[in-house]
Amino acid sequence: MTADEMPEPYRILFLCTGNTCRSPLAEVIARRDLAARGWSHVEVRSAGIGAADGSPASGGALGAAARHGLDLSRHEAHRLTGESVDWADLILTMSPHHLQVARAMGGAEKAAMITELAAAQDPVGVPESVVDPFGGSDSEYEATFELLERLVDRVLDRVGGVVAP
Image 1 (cartoon, rainbow, N blue to C red):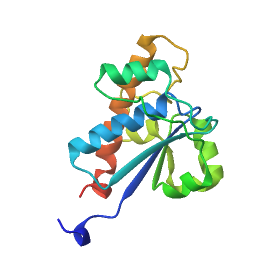
Image 2: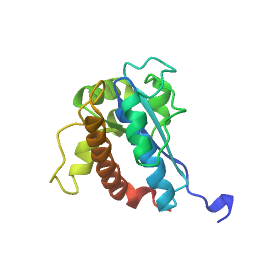
Image 3: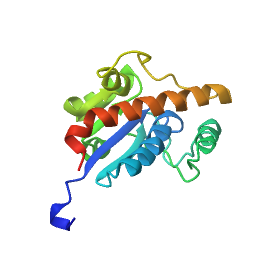
Image 4: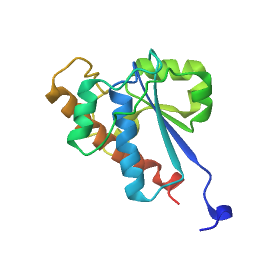
């Protein structure tokens, strides 16, 4: 495929509160899944509505990712900005509050809860939102990781008609 034949980049932003647990996990899962699908033109990032810029991933998120062969050791949290909203073609939030913030910052037409987008295909087993595991046990982080794996896969299937090369 030549440079002229390459599809335009499609940009997905995962959004949570502190950008240390849920959204970085979703980002690293999506990177793995996008590589497996051969969708090199899809870019992913994550941010938090209350993130402290530069904070590392939480220990629980690091462990959950590592147990699945994924690496969050270089993750640095980023606060949601107007620039990151503008960058994204799709903003996937973990809760209704995150969705409200994304919409208020100009992302109205491109923001959705990851659970709602995933449930549109099949609502079975999809909760209303992704609960924050921050400060929780390894099993809570593992449950969050497994939920995000299912949600990311469903969302990629759903947007595939738009973004697949």
